Image (cartoon, rainbow, N blue to C red; front, side, top):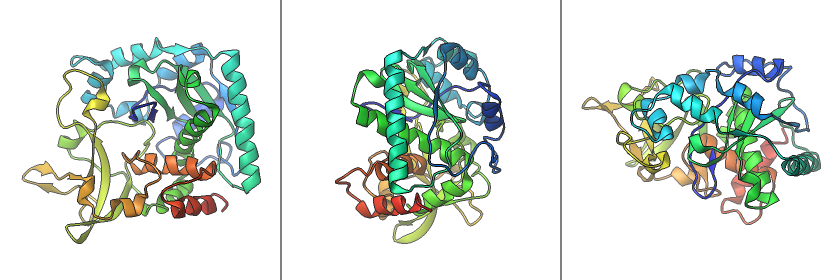
Length: 334
């Protein structure tokens, strides 16, 4: 998820907008990819959801909403006593209709992206359609976009600020999350570009972390880790986004902390004195050697790679880690 101006994470939405989306939702937490949903093609197809359709999308429970923490709910509602149903109701009330002008701009972006894909010979497992939902994001602190299933939610002010280039990059960033959600092979290949590995099972977080973990709808599985140099020694770690205190007041992104949880040989979080160990990112001497410096959005490998995917696909000039850009571009051709 991207917040315009201030980057953050979080989200909400999903339902049956077509038999395709229903099938996608049913498989969102599995490892099997339906051939009818995903296939190596050179074409992106967008479909704009009506406000009524978006409202229906919101009410279905999925991996993301099932794992909302008390902090997720309270912070998004800006109410320490907030409840799950209140958050759903808020989101339902914030959907909007697309305007003809917005539809025209999205179509221009779609055509431009397809021209780029064919120009460079990229082979990317796009779904047969990507559904776009418009919302104020009031329930998400003004985020710019996020994904669920095979659809992208965009804030109603997306096309009121910035230029078409920034809008294109936002869409490509969010498309990456859909690709990794439904194609484990693509996810594995992309994460390896920054030396992250994918586990066959999700990492089970202890209760003290689960309570304050901040959920990101774009991260559909907590299954990645990398080997960092900690105090001069190699240590497997997974990245985590968390709050270090209960919600009281303010926007939820004011509470965001990002850290590294060391994992033991069984890939379980290391605990000391009854608490899960969390290292600050700077504890890893080689953190940026792995993830590069093309983006400052280093809250999760999924977001790091979503930005690098956009940078590579759009061939952005003057990047700080050109070798990573080139590596991703080559991977997209395979």
